[in-house]
Image (tube, rainbow, N blue to C red):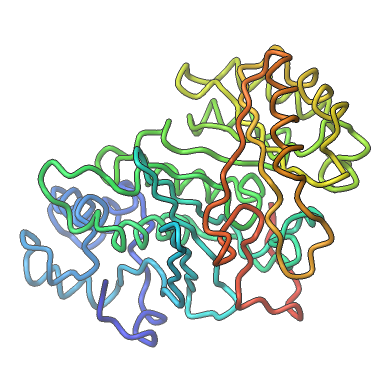
Length: 373
């Protein structure tokens, strides 16, 4: 996926991640016919081409001029692990910076292939049950770095180079990797625009879901501006307990969060109205019958699906998962109260790729976070 050296890439601007409007401006500034913008954009995003010399209908002199100034770079794959269940975890480095590395996970199933992408390097939320929360926030990812995770996975999965009547293997995207997507709203928005642009990559918005720990003020904008799906990392329906295990709840408590969810439902399209509430099952912490009843009461009246997640252990974690029997009983209790619920089957836990297990190996705790919301 490209033959430029790392030193050359640092000296050139990355063309990948530019919007169609950006490409038009670049081509116009070079004094080239405007129709070349569409050709270049299609080569990059529809055909997944990373080398200007491989762009057949681009004039030779324009290719040379582009090569002098730009590179098409998705990021560097440092590690690529395949689980026994075919889940794939990739460690991708950006900007030739060992600290700017994130994990991305591809989960294939019979009917779809879901890519779990990261939005930040590290995380600032410090949820007590999440491995990523032990890694200090380093910085936000750029639109190119977010969309680049998709392109890397699509190439590895065989979606590129494209073939006639090809069905995408990487068909769905969930922002459930490292970081809080809504604390990087501007770049996540730009990445989604790239991923859903019908002139380019062309994923349907309803195939993309943003998972948030509860940044309440921005939740309605997921529906009104991004037009994608919503998942809420809930994990407790008790305000005090949620504040204990998820410090963000002290800033955006449950009443505020649920009001934002109601606003989302009003603004969302029919395909995206149903909210997924994620609930990690922690033994003796949030898994009682009373917890199940509180959960059902909290979300009753919303088009909702509860996704129960048996806790996936990670090195140094203080929790253990609820027993399978307790998880099933909790699920039955929630469903008996009129809420659709299911139990997520762990995928990729043998390579620490399951929910809550992601953490970049290139973590450097001496670096102070400098990303902003």
